[in-house]
Image (cartoon, rainbow, N blue to C red):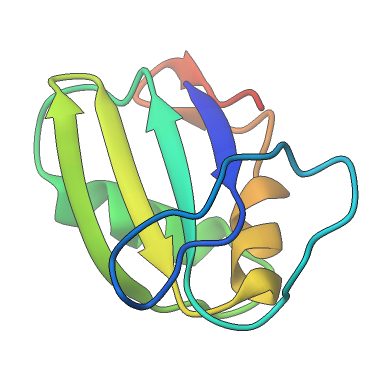
Amino acid sequence: MTFFFSLPYQTSGRRSGRRTISGESDSKSGPFSITISGVPSGSDTDFFSFLEKKASRPFKIIDSHRDTSDVLHITVENYSQSLTLLKLSGIRYSGNKVNP
């Protein structure tokens, strides 16, 4: 599994651009989108529960959808919550290693 990070995700539903997490952010408020590839098919709610148990801080998923069977897009409320998810790099889910 690989985590990707998009900055910023505007509330209008349109993305103003994609940058990696290393670097400066224009804004740390508003929703942020995280793309995870390599997520096994199955219940997304099981995967979200797994993330909630492993996360060091609480987060709220405000939107999620799949592009393909193994690519999952998650939108969280703010920058801090997105960092919480990105810190989960290296954990295993269903035998797959989560990498940034």
